[in-house]
Every structure is written in structure tokens, then in C-alpha cells.
Amino acid sequence: MWRRMWRAVGAWPGFTPLARRTVTLDRWLGKVTRGRVVALGMAPGLILTTTGRRSGLPRSNPLQYVGDGQTFVVIASNWGGDTDPAWSWNLRADPAATVTVDGREVPVLAREAEGDERQRLWDAFVRQWPGYEGYRTRAPHRKLRIFRLTPR
Image (tube, rainbow, N blue to C red; front, side, top):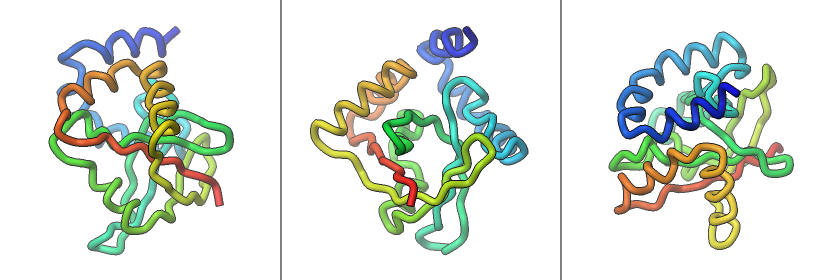
């Protein structure tokens, strides 16, 4: 029930500016709950930890995901912002990462989805969170990258 309500709120044009301000809280909440509550509980979420491509330091980000078999799928939407999020550049530089989900840490290997697979995964995301269509509309100048995170 709550997720349906959040989906409707997520489609509201004013949602993104407000939600962007909650990332710090979401990051903290995800860390404290060991990935049990991420994306403020609005949709299935995980914490993705990548290695900073410049710093070499671990970088953690709360993200919504869609499950596809044994893999976790995430979109580098950056809320429809002008640029790709830093975590996507980190994955492209080093595809080895870790996800924290439901209280467990899972080492993963990232691969960017392309072609028909990308479209199928995009459709799954939009079914889960229609707000992604708005992100694509706000960022028509860039491709919103979709990554498959496969447990290793």
C-alpha cells in the first residue's frame, strides 16, 4: 500500500527537488539499517559501494533497484540531472563493487545493459517507479545508464 502511494507522489513534478534533499538522510538510514531501509522505503533499495575512480576510497550511495534473476539492476538517473552520477563513473572505471541489501553485503560485478536487454530493464524500472520517465524527459541530452550488478 505504501509503495503505491509513494509511486503516485514520485510522479508529482515537485517530488524530485524535495527528494534530492533527502539523500544524506537516506544514506544514513541505509547505513544504520544495514540496507534494510533504503530509498526511504519508497521502493526496493540497496546501498551501492564503489571505489572512487580518483580517490581510490569507498563511496556509498543509496539507490533504488529492480531484481532480475540473481542480479540487482540500477539506473544512473541522477534524478534527471545534467550529468551522470559519480557512482556510475566509478563503476565504469572499476566494475567490482558491493551492495548492501536486507542486512547483507554482496560483492558484485557491474556490467552496463545495452540493446533489447536495456529496454526490458528500463520498462521494469518504469513499472516499479513511473518517475523515471520524468527523469528521462529532464535529461534528453544523455543516456540514463543501466547497470546489472551480478553477485560474484
